[in-house]
Image (cartoon, rainbow, N blue to C red; front, side, top):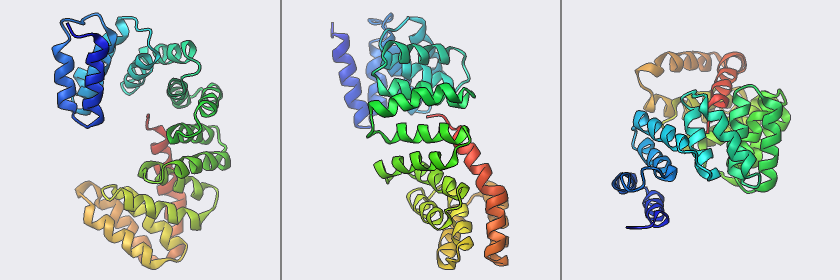
Length: 280
């Protein structure tokens, strides 16, 4: 019989190589032997989620937690997965991970991220600040701290924290887009236009980012960049994007002041609110 640790290490190697089918198959083969091992169910859930099998993955995570895991990594992973389904078991699992392993930065971060989106911002900031002290090189921790600060209505501090996340990982389009939106919030429009356009280049399929970057560029008088971003949006736009693209085109035709108003009063605040609500 292969030891559990050896099985998991083999599965992790498959995952590191993006071989989620192989990881899932390996872990399924071990289910009968390790039926009572929460680790098997948790990491099989991760693999199946990556394969788009959301419903089955949910049941794996539920089973993992029902087996009373002690590993904070399993608690945090399964708890965070359940938070996407608004499952009440998510909170207790994430809290247990944070309390039983206070030096585990990822556990503290995931618990803080959960608390911030559930409206417990003060407690969230405690967890996220602690996570940041434990690992100052993790861009996701810096980003989640910025999310909580914005939800606490501290946009300047939020922009600073998310700016640190960008400095740690300049290739993450989601973080750069949120940074650009936060810069708009604090009236740093030239910087915002630059960050949004970089996010758009990094995420060519994100039509919303292309459109907002186009408006931001127009608002600061960079019509060449505005045209480039709008063309990118047109190229990638689908039927459901047409109302947004038409509204943006109309404002661009009216000039920079019209672009500024649409961005400031409608699109940017709504986009920021929705993206902040996304769970890690």
